[in-house]
Amino acid sequence: MAQNNIHSMESFIDSLLEDHHTTLDNISEHNIELNKTISEMREELSQPPTNSLSSDTTDTVFTIATKIGTRYVNFIRELYYTLITVGIPPEEISTTISTVLNTICPAINTDSLKLPKKAVRNT
Image (cartoon, rainbow, N blue to C red):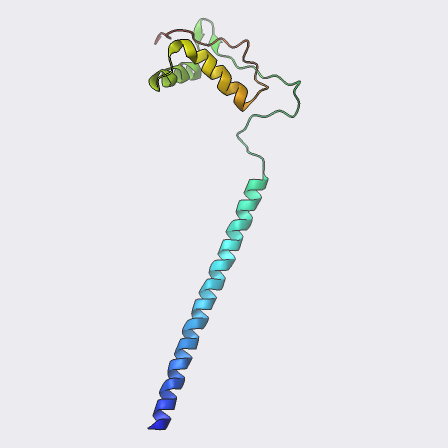
């Protein structure tokens, strides 16, 4: 009887050890995956953004075409209507756009921008 108890305990301990080894293996695999993900994220963060507008010198000036003939280009019209929708009064839109552009990229020349000062017709 004592021999059966010892054998049962050994089997139980072996089963526990096997479970712990499996758990440790799973944790190790998960750790490897996490380290890989962290490495990929570090690599991605070390790269400069691909969709940014920047300048290394203060001598560079960017200009943006806002009108073709007498008509505002589509992105200006869409921006204008979006700002109206969120409650920006028409008389403040040109100042708002200039301020945002200067804040994002001071190299953009906003002094010469032709921006809407009143309602833009839907033509």
